[in-house]
Image 1 (spheres, one colour):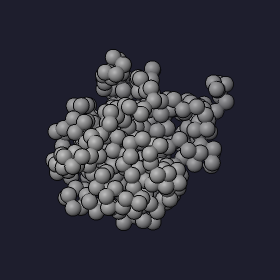
Image 2 (cartoon, rainbow, N blue to C red; image 1 turned 90 degrees about the vertical axis):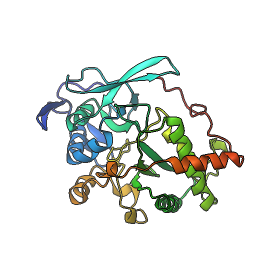
Image 3 (cartoon, helix red, strand yellow; image 1 turned 180 degrees about the vertical axis):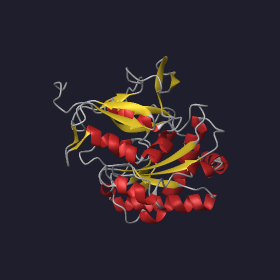
Length: 331
């Protein structure tokens, strides 16, 4: 719903590291649980600036926009919204399924993030590859996605097993809450493989988690085949053009939950609801960016590709087509 002039306050201009970013309708309520506004959202991203920029830097980024606040309609936007200042950068992507191209936001500075908030963006969903070579992922994402009846305790146990296996591989994982009911673990990898190889490696890892706690974890592709009380290790989040909320991204929930980086020793005690736009600025000021050094710890996925070869030789089915069970998401 379009706001009447002045209905939600006069525009505010924020100085973001030397760039002027105009926030219109700054008093528009965005989060109904406590009443935080559009300007509060911008100030949240300023408070966690190094973290959100580190999570998004040089990555194609889909925007989840909520023009009327998070209780209103959500707009999934791949193309950069119109009206961007000349300093906002993009990356051009090709979508072979549709024969189309799109110029997506490519964050290089905090002002880009705050400008996206001006355009009603709440959530930032980056690719797991960067602008220099968008077809070669440099981030392997482990998505622990609980089915509707799965308790959070099962998510924690799946995370513990994932951590155990990563340690055995010599890989360093960086956990975070999803901002919903799940957990994500990110692992930096050299950009030496395409999406299909990274997804295949992710499936091999997921199968190993499933072997160790088969009563609580599933890798079943079709939702109808999954135990409703299981945790799905969603390897498909490593497919091309599949994205999940970035570290420090706010989610479109009434309380403004945040996808919050954790230390491994926090996983068993932290609750997803602990992390919101109201609590994260103080936490960030205290602990800083827990993913700050992720680029310093790359892991070669060759052992996982060997696991994939082993599994397929033993009769395991290859990963299905990643778009086989997806909605129409043309750019």
